[in-house]
Image (cartoon, rainbow, N blue to C red; front, side, top):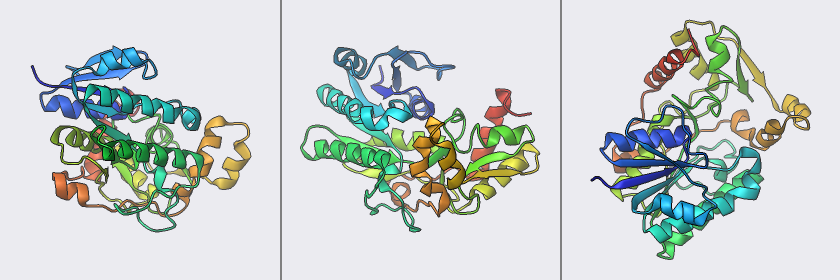
Length: 316
């Protein structure tokens, strides 16, 4: 029987990791609090377990060669709940003797002040979510340095692609209206460079870290195609695939500030708006050089996304 790999989280990132691992012929178990997942990947087991329930989590990860931390608390409770949540995962991986692979975003870097995010960029976030993300990452790598467990992390920019819909800035708020002939909604300026990560490249990067053992002890930036394109350029390509004229509605800081007292999700997004007001670009070839992973060409990634939309009635 092939070795077991356990993925915590059944969202778009967890699904992408599962698909990459299954393609390698590995045993895959997806774990979430509910144990439910729409259209789970063929061949994957889906199990219910709460990460804060130590016996349940230990049972879920028992015998795993790799554990992939792709789960998170609700977005509005990150600061209060995420550190303890992830600490429970670290401790479970240590007890299981499994390699731990973290799916991370770029919040920990904070505002890059016009400079690209690179391998040597410091974790210098000033906002609460960014500081929380940075502290959790540092805690995990401190555990590796202390010899308690093996840890690697893949850091992605805003992801898009199949199944990445409600969570994606190239998803329900942008591609959804565009597919229906309406204006795509974007944050900040549509005309500053902004890197987007294809969800399947994110999943493949995490799978490579979990199965090769060549990335332990550090965080890796996921490769991206066209990292310097703007939101307008990205959506122009999408409009062409969808057969629509491109129209955009950009929501800036003033409008978000007015709405923030009344809309919880806007309050959460406002401190992170810098990502869409100035260039937010990832530049790194280290993962590509080490693992040979070439990013999916952006046009192909968009075509796969549109095809997924059409199969689910989200586009004509």
